[in-house]
Amino acid sequence: MKKAKDIINTTNLTRMVMALAVLLSLVAIFLVATHRTPSAMRRANECKSVVMVASGDTLSKLLLEQGLSHNDVNTIAKVLKSDAEISTLRADRDKLEFVRENDDAPVTKIVVIPSPWRQVELTCNDEGAWDCKTVDIERDVRATYRSGEILDGDSFYLAGQRAGIPAGILADVYDLLAFEMDFERDVRAGQKFSVLYEENFSEGEKIDNGRVLAVAFEALRGNVKMYRFRKSDGTTGYYDEDGNGAIKSLKRTPINNAKVTSSFSNKRKHPVLGYTRAHKGVDFRASTGTPIPAAGAGRVVARSYNRGHGNYVKIRHNGSYETLYAHMSKFAKGVNVGTTVRQGQTIGYVGSTGISTGPHLHYEIIKDGKHVNPMTVKLPAISNLDKADKKKFVEYRKILDEGIEKLSENPSLFIQL
Image 1 (cartoon, rainbow, N blue to C red):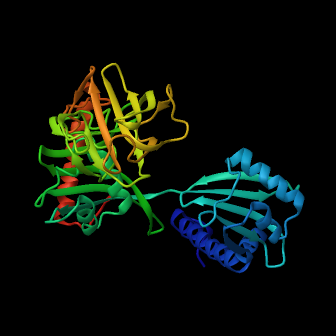
Image 2: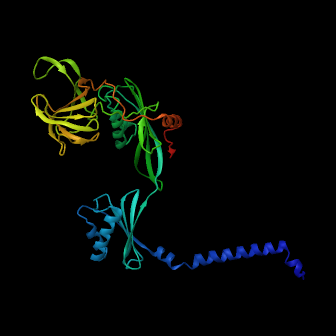
Image 3: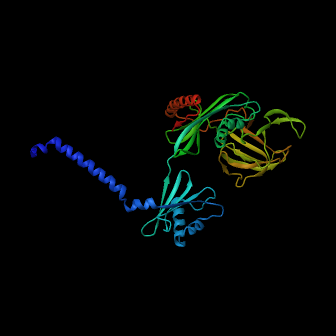
C-alpha cells in the first residue's frame, strides 16, 4: 500500500479530479437523455398546424375554428393591430401557425406570418392574457450575376429573359436605364448587358429577389453603368463609374418599352392637319388605358382639355423644367392643379383625345420655357456624392467590379453578402 502522501500528490490529485469530471459529465448526459425536463417534454410533444389564409377568411373565423373564445378573438385582434399593425389578413399570402401542447389541448401560441422575413408571435401567459412579439427573419443574401446579348429582332425584355434575369429584376433595370436611354431607338443587335442583383435565401431555399446592385448596357450613346451605393448618412442611390448621380430628375421615356411613333422635330408633316409644323415632343404608342407615370417629382400646374392635346397634364419640377402629357383617355384620381406628385406616380391613362390618329402618349420636356428633345437633352441628377463619399464609392466600385469579373467567368457562382 502506498503512503497517503504518495497517493495525494499533485499528479495523482489532478488525475482523480479529471476522472471525476468525466464521470460526472457522462452521468449528466445520461440524465438529460433519459430524464427530460417538463418544458422540454412539452416542446417535444407540441402539436403545430399551419393554415394558409384563403379568400373569404377573416381572423375571427380562423381563430374560432381553432377553438378560441370570442373574448380571445377580440383580444388577439386588438393586440395585432396595436403592437404589430396587422388589421386584416391577405388571401393566398398570409399564413397562421397554431401551437398546442397536444392534440386535445387549447391553442397556447399563434404565429402570424405576413412575409418570409417577418413573423408575429402571440403567446398566452399564465393569466390568460395574450402577449405579442415581432420577429425578423435573418436573410441569407447572395449577389448573383447575369449577362446577355441583344439578337436580331430582340427587345431588351426578351434578351433579358433568355439570360435568366427574373421579371421583377428586369422591371427594375428598365426603370434605372430609362433615365439614360430610349429602349426603342437605343437597342440594337450585338449590344451586351449585365446585371448584378440580390437573391434572398432562408435555410438554403431561395425565397425572393432583392435589389439591383449594378447594371451595365452597351448603349448607342456610350456604355451605361450604374452602381448601388450607401452614403455616409445611410441613404442609398445609384451612381455612375465616377460617383455622379445616375438617377436623373426626369425620365426620357415615361412608359417603359413603349414604341416611339413620332420623334421631336422642328419640321414634321402633321398626320391629321396635313401641313408641316414643329412637333415639340415625342409620341409613344400604347394601348388605351395604359397608366402614365410622372417622369419626375413635381407639382401639377395644369390639368385640362384643349383641341390639340385633348386631356393633358402639365407638371413643374423645379425652376427650370416642366413636362407635359397629352391625349389622355382620363385623369388619375386625386391628380388636380396644385397636387404634388412623386416620380413614377400614375397621373393619367393613355388615350386618343384631341387631334390624334390613335391611342398614344405625347410627351414634352420644357426647359426654361423652351421645348427640348426628351431623347437628347442633358438631364440633371437628383443627387451627387460629396468628396468623402465619392472617395469611398470609388474604392467600393473597384471591389465590386473585381467580383463582377470573377462572376462573369463563373456565372454559376455567387457572392455571399
